Structures are given as C-alpha cells and as structure tokens.
Length: 148
Image (cartoon, rainbow, N blue to C red; front, side):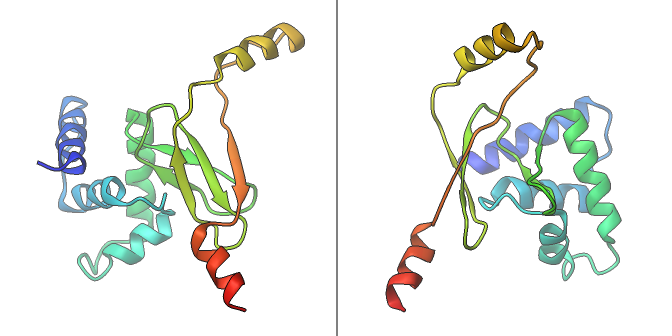
C-alpha cells in the first residue's frame, strides 16, 4: 500500500471516529488532497472533481475543507489576498514558495521552538504556533527564464 493510500485510510478512520458520514464527494475531496502535492485551493479541488461529480458545488468543497480543518486533517494556508490553500500534511514542516508561479513545496527542518521561546520572552506573548516560508524561483521557472 502506497504511503498516500495509507494516509487516506487513516484519515477516513478519523472521520468515522468523529461521527462524520463518508459521502462519495467527501471521500473524493479527501483523496484529492492527500494525493496532491500542490497545496490546492478549494477551486483547484472543485475543478479537478467536477467531471466526476457534476452536481457538486464549490460550497460543498469549502464545507468539506472546513470540516477537515476542524477535525485536524488539513491545515489552511493563507497568503495575503490569495485564495487559501490546503495542506494535508499536518506534521510540523515549512514551505518554499515560487515567486513566479506560486508553487508551494514542503521541506522539513528541525522545528524552531527556540524562536517561539525567545518571542515569548521578548514580547510577553503566549505563542501558539509559527510558520516559516522561504521564497524564490522553482526549478521550472528558472529553466523558463534561462530559455528566454
């Protein structure tokens, strides 16, 4: 069984354990999220699934994403005015984001808990979490620039 298939099975068990009914649309949204490496928006998910579920609305996708977020199966990534993106990897990790095409890639680095601790000492805040992003040009965009 592939890692993503195992993650899907685990996520479905979490939903069942939370008393959530597994509708075909809900299953498809979750499956798409787990198999996607692109941190899709709700609209991306809707477009990917609309041929399979012609009667499904964008609202259905949003409602399912909100439910998955509340249960802890996905994280919502917000970047200024842009649409929220959704990440099924809920382990601690960071993101590299392409300035040109917007691609988001996960990367793992030891958590920066000492930064949180220092922030608490300096500001008096009770820090709940942090996120880190690095920005640049992905390999595809670098190659496009070199070709011109």
